[in-house]
Image (cartoon, rainbow, N blue to C red; front, side, top):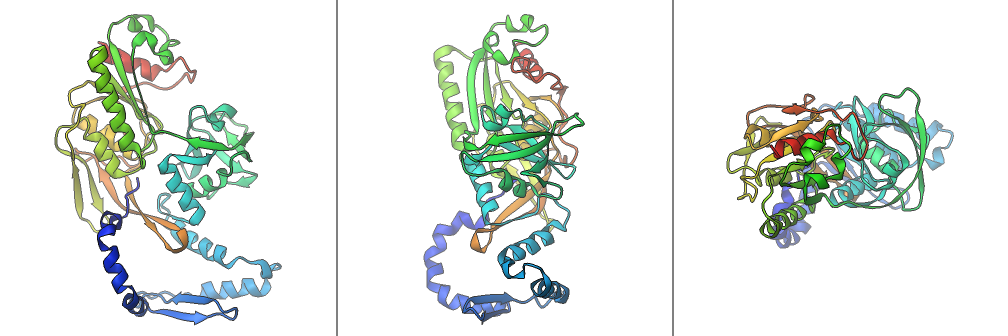
Length: 428
């Protein structure tokens, strides 16, 4: 999950003051950071920062390899120095063995921010990691990936014939995205298959609202009409509200507020609903504060989530507003693609006994990443802590086990067994 940099909260208050001290501050900072400013032979200014004095690190091997490459590599004249530095930084970060602590070059950092913003150019699939491999967390409905036959849980073995072994998640996203109308070739292994398949997918502009909602009678819910023995359920009277959250992004809170307001206004016109099923399947997470905001819609008081930081300190994130859905019965749908902030919300509603959890065991991501912007547009996401559910559970690599386990054996559009169980529970 991603936390906005704390600086953003008071940036506007200090910007004038910063302008006043910047001239003197530059000289001070250069001295404090032991930075040497030199002029290269081609008249470029180079800032060369030495290792901090408290660290005993020998960089001689690094520079030895650097010089050998420029001296001996067959195409040394075309070596890209900036790309080599980025590769060295990425290698240093990857050596931690944490798939969520990542260095993002400028393009990948931009892609990440666009994803949380809800608009980008690509194939329309949310990606994830499983056992060190790139997987499809979910193909977005109605977009090129789904139309091509890409499925939830697919392993992406190659992108344009490049092997994805060792790739980070942002690296995979960057390789798969591209301008609208261009083609990307994916080598895919469907979950359970033995033989990979190749897909050539035309990229498009993907605009994805993070919230969907509606109110229907059971007989009008198309997604459950093909479920076995469904007739007894759909004949029951009463309406059900549907709230689906696909990510905890930049605009999710505003979209959520509108959906809830529309739902409540609709009740005044069309009568009350029996309950709501809250769709968190294939939600990969997002901002921690977004999880607190959504959880507060259903919970009256208490701690939604706690964060244990790298320095051992603990922060509790309590309910931060008066919710509008504090009394409505809730069934939460999760699966193995529900991760991070989605698991916080599902787990908090479970711990406060505000919802019945239906579906499959969730992904199991219990760590917190803090994104930091770097010079030149790059970014660094650092795992700075772990989060705990209200009862103290750390679900990392374990996930949230549903109250009612319902596997997704049938992937057809009209046979959603999990959704059928949610409707059954709400119409009791």
